[in-house]
Image (cartoon, rainbow, N blue to C red; front, side, top):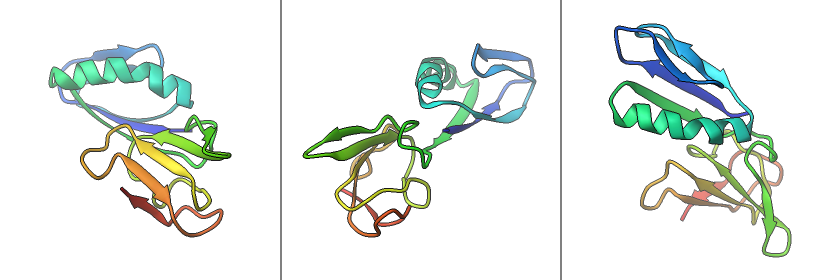
Length: 124
């Protein structure tokens, strides 16, 4: 499951959402959520981060279901997550991964080597 690390930047208690709960003043918490829960919490987290109240990071997982795998192109899955998949997401050559936090040159990754391993992802 995806693990989100959330830091409250304020000196007061801060309710985030029903999945994350309330963060105490200046608290940092790691929360393990299913892919669907992480996606649902993303709106609240993005809103609070834009207001300067929190910072948060997310990491993809090794479970295809948590990364919302969707077979395309003759069966190769397209995985979704947050962050670089190297060292985190296992796959097979030809698999695709999209980074929801990516920028220019780091949004799409192609698994080019290492069958069943979590390395070999190349940003395109």
